Image 1 (tube, rainbow, N blue to C red):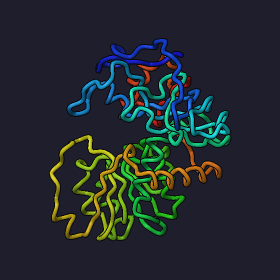
Image 2 (image 1 turned 120 degrees about the horizontal axis):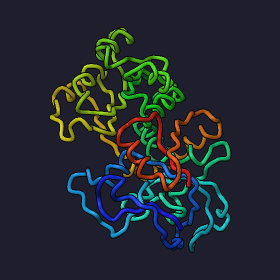
Image 3 (image 1 turned 180 degrees about the vertical axis):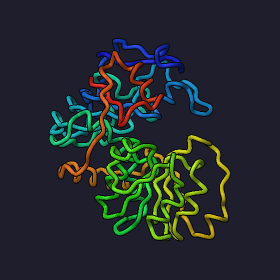
Length: 325
């Protein structure tokens, strides 16, 4: 099979290459998926670049990308043969594993290949593992958000855009922050604030009559901590999935404590099985209803991997970059 590989950390153009690799065989409890689309997330390009603190190559050869979609072509012992031919989306394919979805085939545990309805394309399915599930977990980790006011920072991002939609579907009032009118339209949120030209704290208080918000879905905890502390209502939750501006921010502990705030630093790779199943079930329901819009940025094919990685690194896109396989 053809596969994107790298053998050392470094710039995409220097280390990524398309090579011939053996087609894997599914082991007990596994399925073999013919990959049709491979999603590229910021975590994939950071890992390839060696940007993670203390990162070291754990495998001699790596096939990148955790997200993808395709068709099950074979199953291992203990897996129902009826799954052969099933359309699926894939999660955590490259989490603590050498071989991800950046190839024509991937073998992985059966539960990591989730049914994908015909109403959804493979390219769209390749956006679910990290962006969509991160958005769902950040919103629903504390239960229902019906009649709550939710602030989504960075609503034009891959996670933020899903969060805006999912919060609305959950019965919440949604306010988002963006940097332009174009990105506001992309987010789909009816209420938005341009954080480049407006004071976010003042604007949110104006929109909420001075009451603030019940939940914040946070794209950069360090950068927005002061505003978040001001805006979050007592007993609220700040669910943050990144803090790129400062990886070790100084925490205003007593400020949060005296408002009885829950700070939830989350990573979708570590969802427990029960939470993940709830998320998958909810996502499946929305997909069947065609209730979600998906922002797919087609990045070409396997041979275009280096260019697609650069596209993700520079952030010059609106949506998830997906390679067709």
